Length: 126
Image (cartoon, rainbow, N blue to C red; front, side):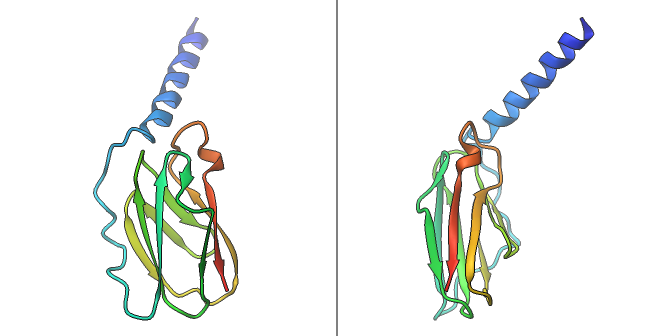
Protein backbone atom coordinates (compact mmCIF):
# COMPACT_ATOMS: atom_id res chain seq x y z
CA UNK A 1 0.00 0.00 0.00
CA UNK A 2 2.85 2.38 0.89
CA UNK A 3 4.47 1.78 -2.51
CA UNK A 4 1.24 2.77 -4.29
CA UNK A 5 1.01 6.04 -2.34
CA UNK A 6 4.67 6.83 -3.02
CA UNK A 7 4.23 6.13 -6.72
CA UNK A 8 1.04 8.22 -6.85
CA UNK A 9 2.71 11.14 -5.04
CA UNK A 10 5.76 10.99 -7.33
CA UNK A 11 3.53 10.90 -10.43
CA UNK A 12 1.49 13.87 -9.20
CA UNK A 13 4.66 15.85 -8.49
CA UNK A 14 6.12 15.09 -11.92
CA UNK A 15 2.87 16.07 -13.65
CA UNK A 16 2.61 19.34 -11.75
CA UNK A 17 6.22 20.23 -12.61
CA UNK A 18 5.61 19.47 -16.27
CA UNK A 19 2.44 21.57 -16.39
CA UNK A 20 4.05 24.44 -14.48
CA UNK A 21 6.51 24.91 -17.32
CA UNK A 22 3.67 25.85 -19.69
CA UNK A 23 1.54 27.75 -17.21
CA UNK A 24 2.47 31.19 -18.49
CA UNK A 25 3.65 32.13 -15.00
CA UNK A 26 6.37 34.72 -15.22
CA UNK A 27 9.37 35.40 -13.07
CA UNK A 28 11.61 38.48 -13.01
CA UNK A 29 14.01 38.75 -15.91
CA UNK A 30 17.58 37.64 -15.39
CA UNK A 31 19.36 40.88 -14.49
CA UNK A 32 22.82 39.42 -15.13
CA UNK A 33 22.33 39.60 -18.88
CA UNK A 34 23.92 42.27 -21.08
CA UNK A 35 22.23 45.50 -22.04
CA UNK A 36 21.28 46.83 -25.49
CA UNK A 37 23.46 45.88 -28.46
CA UNK A 38 26.26 48.15 -29.65
CA UNK A 39 26.31 49.28 -33.26
CA UNK A 40 27.73 46.84 -35.80
CA UNK A 41 26.73 43.66 -34.05
CA UNK A 42 24.30 40.95 -35.00
CA UNK A 43 20.95 40.90 -33.21
CA UNK A 44 19.08 37.59 -33.00
CA UNK A 45 15.49 37.70 -31.75
CA UNK A 46 14.43 34.31 -30.41
CA UNK A 47 10.79 33.96 -29.46
CA UNK A 48 9.56 30.80 -27.76
CA UNK A 49 6.03 29.51 -27.76
CA UNK A 50 4.77 26.11 -26.73
CA UNK A 51 7.18 23.56 -28.14
CA UNK A 52 8.83 25.69 -30.80
CA UNK A 53 11.01 28.71 -31.48
CA UNK A 54 10.08 31.34 -34.07
CA UNK A 55 12.80 29.97 -36.42
CA UNK A 56 14.54 26.63 -36.90
CA UNK A 57 17.85 28.27 -37.83
CA UNK A 58 19.57 31.54 -36.92
CA UNK A 59 22.76 32.79 -38.64
CA UNK A 60 25.49 35.12 -37.35
CA UNK A 61 29.07 36.00 -38.30
CA UNK A 62 32.12 34.76 -36.40
CA UNK A 63 34.26 37.45 -34.80
CA UNK A 64 31.41 39.94 -34.50
CA UNK A 65 29.42 40.68 -31.34
CA UNK A 66 26.01 39.02 -31.22
CA UNK A 67 23.09 39.89 -28.98
CA UNK A 68 20.42 37.25 -28.46
CA UNK A 69 17.11 38.73 -27.30
CA UNK A 70 14.95 35.97 -25.83
CA UNK A 71 11.24 36.14 -25.00
CA UNK A 72 8.51 33.62 -24.26
CA UNK A 73 5.33 34.42 -26.16
CA UNK A 74 3.41 31.46 -24.73
CA UNK A 75 4.28 29.29 -21.73
CA UNK A 76 7.47 29.39 -19.69
CA UNK A 77 10.70 28.57 -21.50
CA UNK A 78 14.46 28.93 -21.22
CA UNK A 79 17.15 29.04 -23.86
CA UNK A 80 20.51 27.28 -23.93
CA UNK A 81 23.02 27.37 -26.78
CA UNK A 82 25.38 24.40 -26.39
CA UNK A 83 29.06 25.13 -26.74
CA UNK A 84 28.77 28.91 -26.36
CA UNK A 85 27.89 29.28 -22.69
CA UNK A 86 24.56 30.96 -23.46
CA UNK A 87 21.69 30.44 -21.04
CA UNK A 88 18.69 32.75 -20.66
CA UNK A 89 15.68 31.98 -18.48
CA UNK A 90 12.25 33.16 -19.68
CA UNK A 91 13.23 36.65 -20.87
CA UNK A 92 16.43 38.58 -21.36
CA UNK A 93 19.39 39.34 -23.57
CA UNK A 94 22.92 38.05 -23.78
CA UNK A 95 25.76 39.57 -25.79
CA UNK A 96 28.79 37.50 -26.80
CA UNK A 97 31.32 37.23 -29.62
CA UNK A 98 31.49 33.80 -31.27
CA UNK A 99 35.03 33.17 -32.46
CA UNK A 100 34.61 29.73 -33.99
CA UNK A 101 32.42 28.98 -37.04
CA UNK A 102 30.08 26.01 -36.69
CA UNK A 103 26.57 24.89 -35.90
CA UNK A 104 25.41 25.09 -32.29
CA UNK A 105 22.32 23.39 -30.90
CA UNK A 106 19.76 25.64 -29.20
CA UNK A 107 17.10 24.16 -26.94
CA UNK A 108 14.51 24.92 -24.31
CA UNK A 109 15.91 24.41 -20.81
CA UNK A 110 12.63 24.45 -18.86
CA UNK A 111 10.37 21.36 -19.13
CA UNK A 112 7.36 22.80 -20.92
CA UNK A 113 5.10 19.93 -21.89
CA UNK A 114 4.83 16.85 -24.06
CA UNK A 115 6.90 18.16 -26.99
CA UNK A 116 9.61 19.81 -24.86
CA UNK A 117 12.25 17.38 -26.15
CA UNK A 118 11.60 18.49 -29.73
CA UNK A 119 12.01 22.21 -28.95
CA UNK A 120 15.33 22.82 -30.69
CA UNK A 121 16.88 25.16 -33.25
CA UNK A 122 20.36 25.77 -34.68
CA UNK A 123 22.64 28.79 -34.36
CA UNK A 124 24.97 28.87 -37.37
CA UNK A 125 28.18 30.86 -36.95
CA UNK A 126 29.76 31.61 -40.34
